[in-house]
Length: 150
Image (spheres, rainbow, N blue to C red):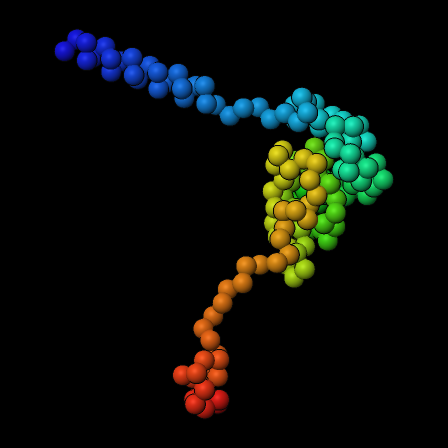
């Protein structure tokens, strides 16, 4: 009986150790933590981006900075942040914001998380929805051809 009690105790200890080890890993982007990235300017953050994204940021940094500033003002007033600008790159200052991105007919509310850094807002708001097929209409099948159309 003593051996079984010991093995149970060891099993519980191992499970506790595994729980401790599986804590959420701190987010890093190209070796920088989120706090370090938030201190960077938009153009300084561009140095850590891949070539295409870096080129986009360096050409449009004014637009991105203007959007971030407007978003911060709206957050202070506790108003929703909505935008039609689907081509804006996600920068560290946006992390934690809830942004309504226009899909063509509605605003898709999206919370910006650290994994979205370097991606474009439009990637997170789909413009095309999945087709939901209904039943076939009158005349669409041979059995329903003879039915009246009114």
